[in-house]
Amino acid sequence: MKIKQYRTQFIKELSPFYDAYEAESFFYLILEDKHQLRQIDLALNHELFFSEADFVVWDSLLAQLKKEVPIQYLLGKTNFYGLDFEVNENVLIPRPETEELVEWIISENAASDRTKKIKILDIGTGSGCIAISLAKNLPNAEVYAMDVSKKAIETAKRNAAKNDVDVTFIFQNILETEELKCQFDIIVSNPPYVRNLEKQEIKKNVLDYEPHLALFVDDNDALIFYKKIASLAHNNLLKNGQLYFEINQYLGKEMIDLLGKMDFINIDLRKDIYDNDRMISCKVSI
Ligand SMILES: C[S@@+](CC[C@H](N)C(=O)[O-])C[C@H]1O[C@@H](n2cnc3c(N)ncnc32)[C@H](O)[C@@H]1O
Image 1: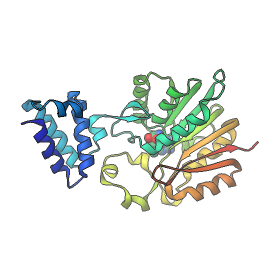
Image 2: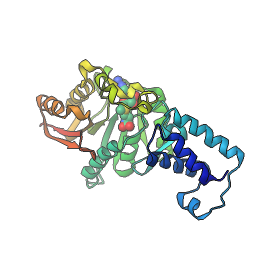
Image 3: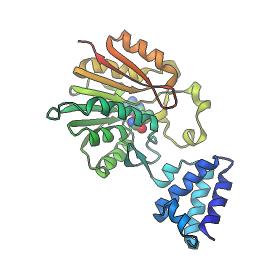
Image 4: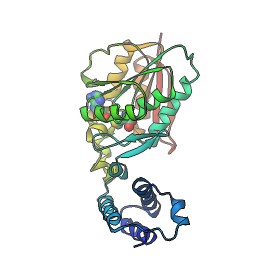
């Protein structure tokens, strides 16, 4: 079969699950990953011919996509902030909203005195996407990253090596942490923040395949991670130090109240590209 014919069939078979645009983007991601071919190659070479064995691979990927397995897990990789990351079922697939948080931190810290080290701690690092992007883009950063999942830490370590950056990984439960070992200039976290009451908004491809440890938080204490991290930050943020959080879009006001009551200053709540309250930053009052 010609690959162009296969493309039509591929998109049609995915139509109950994904719109044509998404299905087509999956097709080209596979084409690039498995055959090192781009859309333009397909357009130019009308006679492209794929072997029977190639189509066996395509069929197996198509079958998994029909079960709504995320394409990133099928290919074992994704792109975040211009860098390549390994992803697997032990880590959350990094989201574009989180790239916005990283962009915010870089924009506020890139111009800082390059002779002075900036110590950064990323709590709940998952694939390591935040920690590694910061280490790559802030040359004077000394980056630490924590997670309670051993398998996530192993993945993040491979991602640090792949992207050629030094990050110190810490296997630790932040909720059981009495005190952090050192003082930081920046503490950043994208902790679990989806409440069970929001489960019905979560798509099957997320709910069935992404780690629930990374996603969900107890409905009765939805801000538990923020409270814990903010209280540790009081002792472990240096003078002028800054906290950055990704947050649940429905809890922006609650986050402002929480940080205000805990005496943080310069509280700045920002929206993501979809116009949802998504990230917040503050400083310790001195
Ligand atoms: C929303 S994911 C964020 C992953 C990654 N930082 C990102 O932005 O894509 C939350 C992460 O927090 C970790 N986590 C959950 N509970 C934790 C705890 N008690 N202590 C430390 N990390 C925790 C999860 O394993 C997961 O990797």
